[in-house]
Image 1 (tube, rainbow, N blue to C red):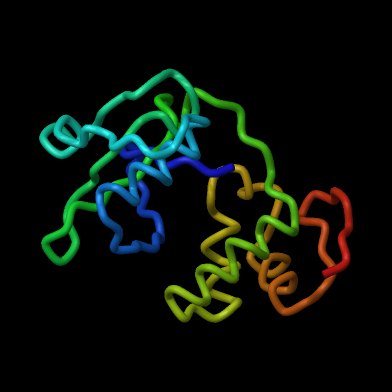
Image 2: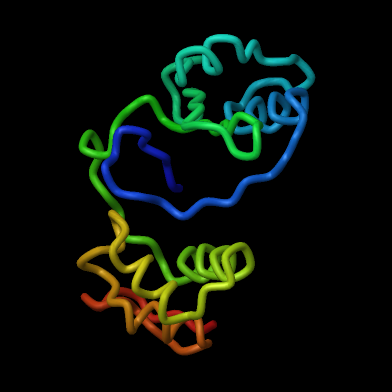
Length: 151
């Protein structure tokens, strides 16, 4: 799992999709383990930048700004990065993130490796080289050992 912390000082690569308010409500309901089909009231998140819908993960709506005149909306956990213990991502998850960064931003594997190896959770467990190798189809278990997985 990955969560967006709007108060973090670091920048984060992202991908945006233009969806309707109804589509966003449906996606958010599914992530919140709620029954889809009911529109979320977006007034608070659009006016204040944040709306807590509940205590669970993905139950906090955030609007970090606008893109091409459209509000950028996401959902995340109500806690901040410093409030949780980090888990190192496994190879499959890094491959998944890496393929998304390559598709959305056109980044080469080396840039993706440098970026992902510095993210919380991965830092100290994965090197830029081990992530890039993983994205090139290599076998890697991270910087500090861990399980080795086949691509």
